Image 1 (spheres, rainbow, N blue to C red):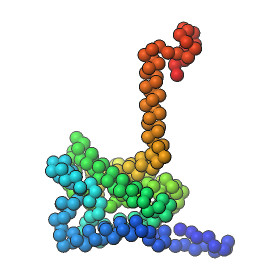
Image 2 (cartoon, rainbow, N blue to C red; image 1 turned 30 degrees about the vertical axis):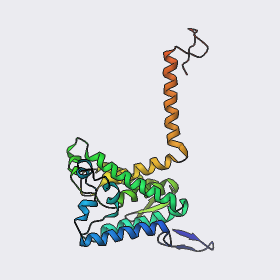
Image 3 (tube, helix red, strand yellow; image 1 turned 90 degrees about the vertical axis):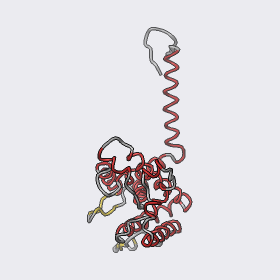
Image 4 (cartoon, one colour; image 1 turned 90 degrees about the horizontal axis):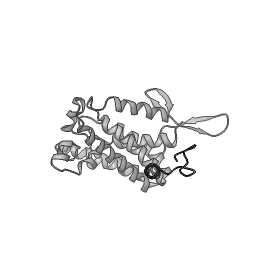
Length: 245
């Protein structure tokens, strides 16, 4: 991120700076669960998200607990997710404050889990296998953070492999990939897609925006039905130049 000092010099730094409270708590919780599951691997099947267990056994905690678990066959999975949470989460927590940030993180993480459940119930061969599969990781919530970052800082460059592109296009690309490959490989693209969708809807609804729009459209549709039912037109019931509002 460029920092402008004197006009003739530009310095670059990696990441958003010192860690914020909520991001530190989230990373600490994920690292703690990761260490525990190294010794008790069966916890993944109890706390990870398995649609068959949630729906069939009513293990309703799994859409919450799954986001704190990561693959134990190496550190890559947890390192990538925690790095992403730090890079985007710190900026957003400074912008929103700790309370709203934690609420948003929870909504997108659980929303990503709900998306996995819904996708597993679809009557398609490509998604049917996810019904008995286990989903773990914080990437659903991370994708929610990506959506928020792109909405707040749409022109901020993000590295896609080695090429910097604006955040708004970066999210479009990863969103299209999540939609295209949902159910198609080991990576839970359904969770990624759910994090993006729930993040977008949640932020759009702040201040009543989305809810107010839905209510307005519903009331407008209802009023038009009543007008048609009672034959109400502008200018009375004249047969000339009728306009239905």
